[in-house]
Image (cartoon, rainbow, N blue to C red; front, side, top):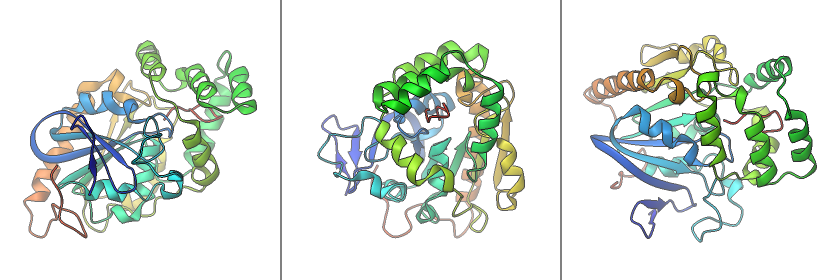
Length: 311
């Protein structure tokens, strides 16, 4: 059973996944927000969780060893050996779970086949079905150089640590946000608990080899795929080539004028997209045979890389 933090608002699964509850509204659903990065911490999706105003209880999710979820008794000594499959433990903590992944967070979800059958729904924000986005972003970044980026990348390469990771990510902020949201985006990035060890694990074991290991196709899982129309980090064209994500129960939404963190530029449009997902969830929950708890046990109560991407 997951531990409960001393403030009553945080809980950990048996392997150290941390869930922190944030104020929400009445509703049956438990919304679990998984951050991108990795290494940015769930603080990076707090704005997303607030912007969408979903009905139910909202939780921020940190894998063991990510963000500020380290140096505590609940996190094991070698947490990255559990990534990303330990996300299934988070889904098992609660009933009626809708998991929301931003960027790499969504990729972690799709790389965890154990989640199939455990979720009532999911949302993939600025994410991708496979690692093909990396080559596209590298070409775009090369064509749009940023002042000081080469120096920041060299400093990070020579001494990769939390401090140089933060500096590199802030230098590359312009790639993640539109001009209108750049100041707000920089403020978000400046205040995150950077974790270089998480980045190093992803570089070595995940990023290049990633491909979705399950899809919402077979079970009719209500799913939202949403992104900003100006997202230059993760190529959204990739979804169009994946037939398993072209289903009536998979909603596709593109938010014009928004970047990789679309809630900063267009929170109202993003809220509408999540309202559409909620309506699909409610309809699906009313159909015979739809699950609302966990697959194997009852539910319980409730970038920066050297390439410079942030999510």
